Length: 450
Image (cartoon, rainbow, N blue to C red; front, side, top):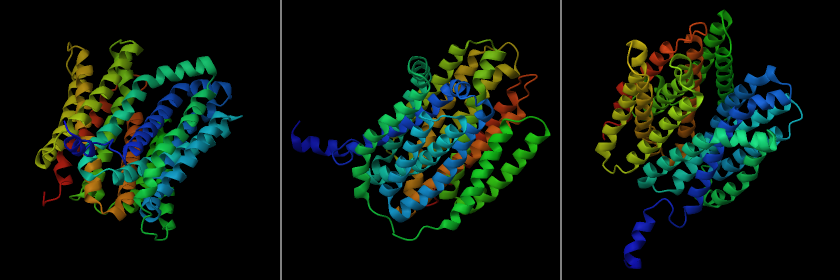
């Protein structure tokens, strides 16, 4: 093949010259964010024991969730008004500072503060990576880009717990934070030069009034997280208060018509929250179902979760190869429907005596495949429906919907779950209803002209 023939093929790939370093750096950074989240969850019992901080154990996770909501909102404004380069610098600085503070923390309160900074930084970076790299990469390659982003979560999900356990045992719990901190500058050096060339935004002043609503959303997410850790009447009060705060803030922060699934961009934003919440709430209780109800070992339950992560990656790769717009529009509801059907299959052994427990694994594989088909398409649609000067704010809304609806679903799952009977069926019914709702509403994500 001649150079003239190969040049168009090279230019039509994610890793063509001019965007190769940005894509590699973004994938590395996403993998670090994923590993940090998974590894910290694995290491936190050792951290709390070493710092005598069991009383702040839940807050170490809740603080990260709460500040990430603020980070997402701030990042949307920074990207649109100052450009993704400055937003990326701010996010990297906060994330790195949080890792260093947590890794060197002399006490549990200091570690919680570090975790809060990590949440702020990861919230900013989550939005910036989508907007900045989405502008570096041509729109025709966005399906491949978001498939690669999805794949970047898979490897940390597979090896993260084992690697974190090894680090804790061999080098101590601090190494979990410091190892990620050491790798962040490398990813930043790869990604930042390309983001600097993207542009500087509109130059308009930041709307600080928006951040008040972000603060309310953050408090709502924190209350929902706290509700999932409680029991009795107090939990329901926290859940109601958190839901009210999150709902009021969402009305202000998300595109008009989101809560009513208005056609186009608002429906895209709502669908992201629904399907993310369905997956998160089911995934949280799946190991409990397999180990306590069906007698699987922890290793077997872990393999089941990993299988779902792998099929998610496969589904993402499949949708990236679909070129026809009409086919992509049909594949979106099909993916959601497959996820809902998979959750129905996973519930079947609980509903019909005598059915094999292996159906839970079969259902979960279908859930991963269905979400893999549809989840990246929402990101592609969002950027396609957003003018460049609004991509930051709209991407922020997409990820806010994910965070807030997932927080509400996880809190609701915690309240539906009965520790005495350890009955997981109500949680799976809720998750299935969320996925089915996404399947029904998904045609509204496509504008009428399409």
